[in-house]
Length: 289
Image (cartoon, rainbow, N blue to C red):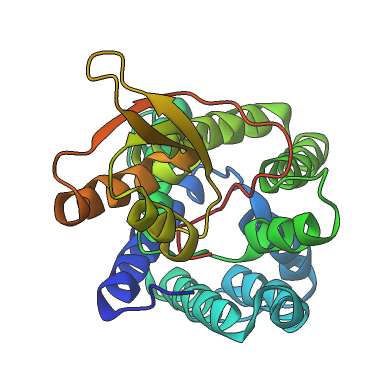
């Protein structure tokens, strides 16, 4: 975790605040269920609420307790710094969920509108947290831990399986209409994350520069990525040159282009979007990992 700065911490806290405000203001009053561990905590709190009566937000407490075992196991897999940062974010979300009031009635006319607005705001909050190189734990943390051990898995697949279980259980236990609206909210949340979080989008980058060794060092050391160096010949000049080929995220491409301004402003860099990668390529949840 190279990017634990006050600015990134503020971004993570802002993202958590927006997510929790959307959850408490739009999702909960509509009786919808969030994805991941937040949705699981809603289901568990719903059962516990029928047995015990408390004066505080039981769902927020359950959410925090579900993440604690992951923190303990995750230290060995992801390192203490990464887990500590995630712990701070989860603690902040627990606090925000506890203090942000839940309206007694829906703020909009129908559940579909609540799902669209609530899901979109949740996605914006999550994307801001990712931009701060943070994670809110839950299925994201579980997915990262499992993919370290089982390479055929991915964070997306783990999220998909957990969310499928949450919405199926909510549909069977309560109503399929609730499950459908919850899926609508999750869909819009995912759309907003993909729009704003460039770490999910991969590109193939080609670099032609006489300072290729400095670019290689930046890609290997700063971005923690691999690259391939190929010998080529300029068709116009007839001079030999080196071509660096690497697969990066759109966010990492931005860092590379910024680095090129100081390394070699005359470097020829072009990229191919929407790259699909098979094999041993680490697709990260955030650039801080």
